[in-house]
Image (cartoon, rainbow, N blue to C red; front, side):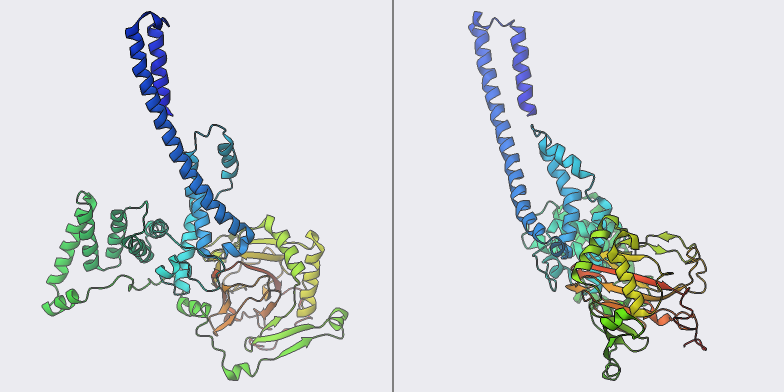
Length: 536
């Protein structure tokens, strides 16, 4: 377009110079012939560029048309695959902006005006980064190697999804920018593996090797860092940072060798450390390994002896006409502490209505700061939640009444019904629902005492992951749509039961919906009388 415009301006200038009396001079007319030839040439270049641009746009539109047909047929199922969720964040944050630039000269302005309206609702860089970190969290928790993950080979998936070289590169770069060199190595290694296999990408091999070699160095593997940096220099001899890094790595390695006997030198040369064998760094969570093992269904301490103590029954009450007319099916999930599951707690219609009410109110879930009592967001709780009042809809009042009937505890002093939805990699790491003695401000503003019990409704099935686990005694409870689980957080003495520290495992495949009611101490004096000892 610019070339065509320049040529048109040139011919206009020429016409001005000859004062529009072209016919009076053959010589001047011959000049116009050559000018016209240049104009035709530039017009052809413009058409070719526009056709090339249009072909790229058509290819993009056709690919996205197939994708959106599949995604809109079952949105939650499609986004239940974490790779699809990550790539949606990436497309809307990065790739659509590139397409917008490509068609910026759209003469109708239809596309530009349309995308401008929707852009305010697009995910941003933080969303894309969060989705990438969620994939890494799933990778760690469920012991998924990068290659299987990049091919979308996950249990229970209903949609195909894969990660390209550029996707893997972006994953690795996200980790690198967070100083997470462990995951940077895993994903840059996968990007390199796919590129070496012949897959094309916008990222260059030298870029991958640059990030990978330094990340390997940060993991303490100097021999492999040197090997990768040498490969980088051979590909891009002018890479100034690579040459500087190589000199430094070799110098440090030489110093290390001088402090090592020859036998160890020979051994290290014969058996270089392979990529992918690095240990994951320790973090702030003391029960990390136990917690994640339970999420995978490993280490569950359900013995035949313990199972023999578990029963199922109908819960009815002659003093409660609602339970008398419609008893509730109750199953023991664990004996000590007692955790029970109630079947048919919520109907499909009730679940859909609660979700409908919650969706417009969903916001990033918060935790209560134990020192200040103020609600704040935290990296260890990744979900969105909404609080629903009885006045919002009759179904909320029915659910609250049902909880009171089943537990025998009053809901007058309970917190509002909280609805939570866990997205890609959504989780809530091990925590206590009750406040401990040093957390004096936790529920002070409520004036209803501590959280005596938790009633948790499962409002969806989860294809993979998403269990509720108790690391202290090795229990794992899996979501079953329409059921609910209940446990006491406090002993009858009012002391906290520290065994109830629990977690919501990351959702591997699917979308997890729950609603919970936290019941408080006040008003329970005659419904759950105090015990005589600390463990009563």
